[in-house]
Image 1 (cartoon, rainbow, N blue to C red):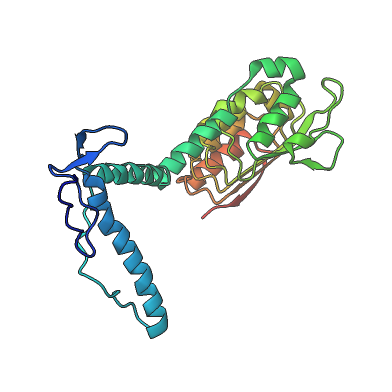
Image 2 (image 1 turned 180 degrees about the vertical axis):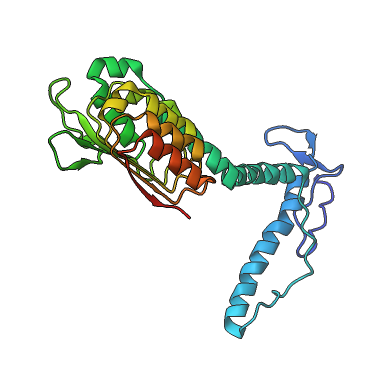
Length: 283
């Protein structure tokens, strides 16, 4: 004879659990203690909040404002410790990106890249010759070159002409707004046909660079025209060093705020090189 039946559950209530808070395991006649599930109890407010927000948007669309959805008062939304840690992990990369995008970090990155571009490859010089290797260095740094016997300026690294070793000789260099720096000036040592150099808006050109040019034996003989424009790190010391360029015929100086003793510097140049045509645009 069957025992008394359990009363039916109240309306709206969930299924009745066996006495003791256990849960029946299919195929077994024993009860397993029910686990305390903190997750769903805490996830339900988040889900209800999401649904309420959707309903609120629908109401807002119809009535012109965001209205709370009807229903029982919502429980406050709480973030568990794990959620807080996850949020921290998501925010961390953002701070890292901010550090990379800082002006100082960008300047450091570009300075490092420019130093790499100026690194001298002596094996490459031996393999392809000084003019070809110097052309690659100059174009890599944003400068232009013109070869002897040609009117066209070369500006494309991948478009450099090919031919027998030593066929193309650099005759002119236009380093306007390039990143050439002292570190790469060893590329100039084997150039014997350079007649003209223009240094304009070169942020890495300084007195040591001009001294290096003036002490390069091949340039002392070949260089005829030199223009130095808007190079803020050039001072009187670097300009005076140019008197060693024995065959220099024309020197143009413009917008060089580092030159403090203009009259004295000009007199030294004229005395050491009387035949030099010196054109100045200095304040």
